[in-house]
Length: 309
Image (cartoon, rainbow, N blue to C red; front, side):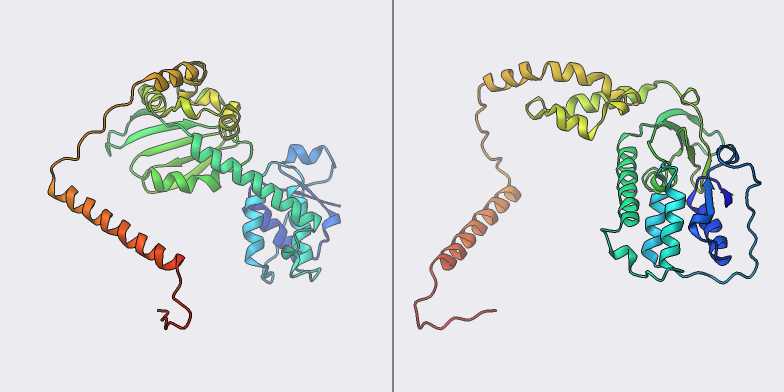
């Protein structure tokens, strides 16, 4: 039995898996561990070292690399062994079409992990809230920091979204697993940190509350649906979450007040040439649609000549 100790990242697993395949090491002969401390719980031997100079490149379907990169972000300790088993089956085992078999137990498990990772990435994109911490004296760029607690190791997969959307400011996203940093030119990663490393409330939080208060529609409150999309575990890090209880509690009264409000008279159309032209175009479009509808409802008499364009 070989003990393979790797950093908990896809790139580290891929390098180790490539070396194992080059040496024809079967999946049942490998014990995977994220770090030396975890490996010590199982065996006492030294972790395996891999150096396979000149090893032939191993070709695998591109779909597997995408699947593996996503599944590797899951926190299930079985992921490295299962990824290597599927890789072995695709290559040495000759099961080239394995990924097109959703009923296969290994493939189905990898797909389930990928779905969980995808949901976690979506939540990170939705619930990260940056706080202003300063301005770089040399560049004049504002610097922001955010704290997020993902379920899985998704920082590297989720960060390109923030790099594209917030390219004009310097930012860091801190998580317990890993931290992402953008300085305007380079995206890099560091080790995870505790919650105490993140900044406390700032003026931006009140802007979030104002925005949330104004978009809240009491007539469309569905608490179960809201908690499904925004689980309570994220509320502690969302500035607007402090408003939710009060807004829900007052929603019935606000809806009743809306219903009791008298309907306002429709204002006349402004005497504007441009708006009048749009109105005329709309009326013309309605007439055309009505004519087309009549022609569709009443086909040509039998024997009449028709043409299809």
